[in-house]
Amino acid sequence: MARRSRKLTALAGTVVAILLIGAATQSAAAERGETTRTFKPVKKKPRALVFAPRTSPHAVVRKARVRLRNRRTGVRRIRRLGVRRVTSAATSRSVLKIRKAPKANGRLKIEVGVEDPADATEPDPVEPGSDTDGTAGSGGGGDGSTDPGGDGSSDEGGTGGSGGDSSGPSPSPSPSPIPTTWRRFASFEDRLNSGIDYGWRVDSPFEVTRTSEAGASDGSHAVKIRTAGGSNGCSCPRMTFDDGFSLGPGSSVWISGSWRIPNPSRLAWSRLMNLGHFVQSESTKNYYTGLVVRSGGQMSVSTRQYNTDAGMSTLMSDRPIPVNRWFRVDLHLKLSPTDGQALTEVYLDGELIARSTRRNMMHSGPLHFFNAGLPYFWPESGDMTVYFDAPRLIT
Image 1 (cartoon, rainbow, N blue to C red):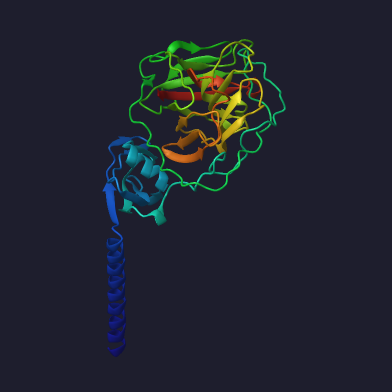
Image 2: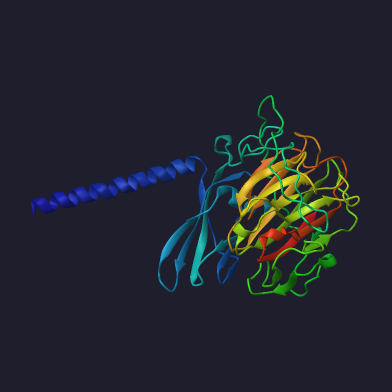
């Protein structure tokens, strides 16, 4: 009896200690102004849940997670989310798409607190002429080689040289909110050429069709780009926005697109989307700024002449291309041909992944059209299928 009494006393003490620790933790969180908010999905798809997190203007997201439960197996799991991704969705009033098993359901929980500079979630301070990961920037260093692309484009060559110098770091600004409305937007739900200018550029042996076989970024239908190799004409299955806009130094522009690439490791020396300046064939003044694939399975952002790496400016170094799933890239540009006066921000699925103040124009000549899909495809990539959806632009 005495032994049982001692065990019960010890157990009671343990319970009291746990309750006290919990109360102290809640009290400390309350003192810091922290709360936990729960969000139900605003839309349920067979393999994804869509959430619309919202916070007050001065709230800071400290943690975020999705609690999932599979109704068929009963298995529960917790998926942690990047704070920057959730913050971007909350501040821009956009949505988060979370992949899941077909029978799973769940809730999004985020812990928020009052704004505190010590807990800032933005990237580290950016030095003029550098980007957030400190990789090589503008300058020469290409091998000058070109591709046999009928449009005179080229994406081979070495990486750029060093970026500009800085006397010291400057405070990093908050991420720019991703737009929720766009001046130009194309959906392929009803027609292949809906919302674009000139229709699709398609040279044999490329095939561009509208399909639902791989789902879509928005809706159920997307574009399927298929090729068994490059073309003797323009190796460039692409769509275009070209309605008279002209973006010079000081202009601000957002471009966006979504892709699903089953085997990205086989894709190299190609482009996914870009803004372009083109005056005449083979001119040294022709250049583009956009999302490119130089190394197999890796995407980057650069400003570059069509035919050479000379003077190229690297704005985001190589990042892995997501494999066989839909991903969205939003690119924000405040344009300038001068290091330290430009701003480039790159978002992957709503999360800021790179920021650079290197120049994002080769010269003051304006960028005046937008291409996306596969604006250039390197023929040596061979047999390839790429799905594309939801091109967007706002100036």
